[in-house]
Length: 449
Ligand SMILES: Cc1ncc(COP(=O)(O)O)c(C=O)c1O
Image (cartoon, rainbow, N blue to C red; front, side, top):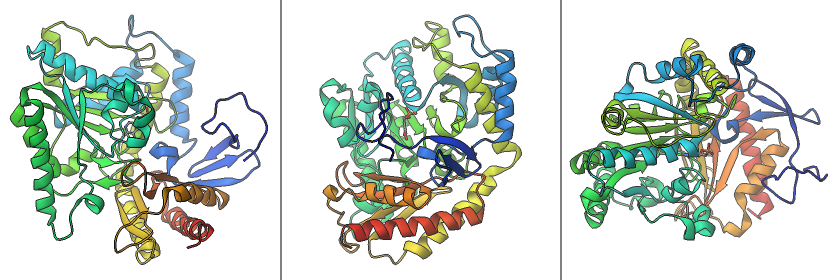
């Protein structure tokens, strides 16, 4: 890490990261000329890799026409075209798109839309939201209150609304009991959610919120078979909405455009972000069912929310470019094939590793979880900061991946999340696993294992 003084308030106030000065497909280029293999697209952002010519072209064409017009006065061509692309065929009943600047804003919009919908339906008593522990929905105060990550919430706890409560996540590796079948595990989680509705008063709950495949907090955790059908049923029975957070796992990352397609259900409200614009522009979206929007249209006639950069034309043009490339180049097929390859390679390299307890994920969204002891699933002492050591060792070896701590309960546990671009090749995947293997072993060695 370079030590010169920077006026940018960086993530670490003690170190200035090296400058990235270029990108080329799966590669990032640092100021000293080093080429870093981008195995996680930052935090599952760069789904097309870097500098994709079609996206750059879409951006420059829009820049030459119109960079910005406020949504209080105008719509724009790219916003209309992007919405048509995303919800024109009303997937799962989602019929409208609200474009914001990132994932947290998409979640905030979803929470507020759910609340306003119930006011306008004549059910103003619905003020409660149920989410899950070990989830992440963003860092703004509403989204942070919804999330269940203990470490992120702690300093801000006095500012977080108690309209949100949390139930057990569908995290089989840690939450399923030994000798409990997957079916019984799902039944137990469903019973807990039902009990939470009853505790709050079923007609006071506006929505249940969850990530279909948990991202950074748990490390690519898909739910067991039948879980999402069970929670959808509970929401339906009590007249509550289902809000799915696909900020990280959505837009093709798991092999289908929406992760919920693999669960046999659809949400009423959905948040997407990272893979929507692939990092070419900051953009997120809240997708909402026609029924919710029709109710508000017939009521007050306007969603009572807004930001200056809603539906930013440059951001929408970039996202439309990204989504058209995914469709035209049939990249979801690549995600499925390469995802299976990645899973196979991770299993070959880490399946018998004494400190890798679990390998999990969907599509090009896979993680390994590190444990001190495989038999008891005991995590490493968090003071060792194993995840940070792996990140540093990987970077040193020319690999950018996304290790995180707090996997078990927000404090202990370590995992490494991988989210390579959809344009990767099988050779790129092999190199990712090879470099990650070296980084994991060298980090473990540094803590005496
Ligand atoms: C599942 C999930 N929701 C919400 C967010 C917040 O998105 P943003 O960082 O763009 O505000 C993230 C970011 O990592 C996320 O992974």
